Amino acid sequence: MPAIRIPRIASRALVLAVSAGALGCSLAAVSGASTPPLNTAAAPPKTVTAQLIRSSPGELAPGTKVRSGAIFGNRVFTDAKHGFALASPPGADYAVVTSDGGRTWRIDSPALHRHAANAPLVVLYIDAVSRKSVFAWGGGQVIDTTSNGGRTWYQTLFPTGGPIAVVPGGFGGQLLAFVGSFSGTATWRYTSKDGGRTWRR
Image (cartoon, rainbow, N blue to C red; front, side, top):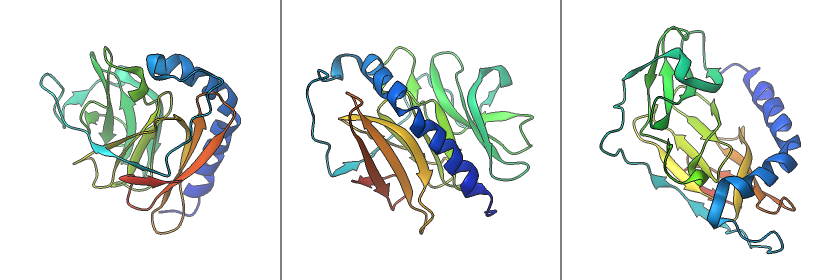
């Protein structure tokens, strides 16, 4: 991967971290009934483990072509041809992939969030360490990751807050996540050394 990739990602994370106050406040609204009262200081877990995201009947199959108008948020490219984005065709949000510089996009994940389902599973941002290692987060309480180019996706639900920034750690493929409390009064750093399957504070 080119050396210029990390500063670009880090600068985006810095902008997201500066917005932590606003995002922290929005977590309470997004999370609905699972949100503790603002005066409750919930202790964050030391380890949070991901669950495999399984496809459900009625979902779009991997490889299904998606129109460009369904794509929302950022688009990230690992080289001139290969990139990732999030798309919202009717019913659910998915990760999508391109191999022709963005001319066509195809489904590359199970449904990451179903529109009629619970809000803590919302993701708004996507980024990639490489063509195999991709992660999505923001707006809810989860980080969704794949380390095998989209063949399997895992979802980590943080019970005491929501991710406000996720960046590559720079050491052996680590990922770093900054998770803000529901009250907006605390931020915790989690590290994953296994592509997002396990996170440790």
